[in-house]
Length: 193
Image (cartoon, rainbow, N blue to C red; front, side):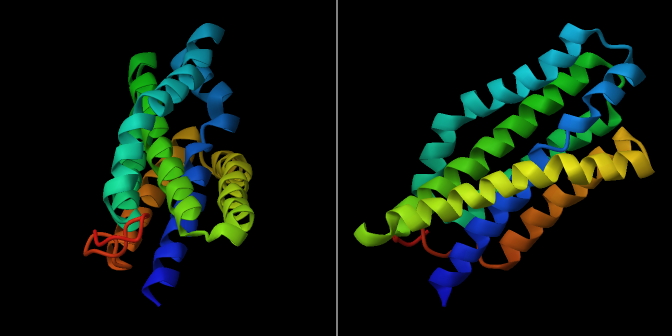
């Protein structure tokens, strides 16, 4: 039962964080218009997201090897909320860039945790299936994020969409803590957290 709960946390955590990480895509133009950003400044939002992911990859790998997936998703959800919050309240390009960087780092923690968990839990005959579950959660989240954000932004504003991402990040952190991530559980390598 604990292994299934850990798998649920890893899969749903990855799906949720991937969804939230891609909220920025359809609202880049609105952010640029509202903050009077140039095209290169808007492009820098995506570049800084990618740099955040890149610079967090190795530390996220260490984290994924040492703690239960739920604990890592508590951190990813908290970072997602913080980064999204910075973007939501930004009054300048610099604040959006810092927020995008933090969102990228949160995305890296979630992606690396999910990949590590699903790769390690699979037996020799089920690695392909296990990695397909990982890839599906990742890609479904990346597909849902722009749609959800676009709908929310159309109904409210780009800031409303990013505020929803704050709530989503906090929900991931709380749910993963309640499902056992912060209290223990199995590490991705099967050891005690």
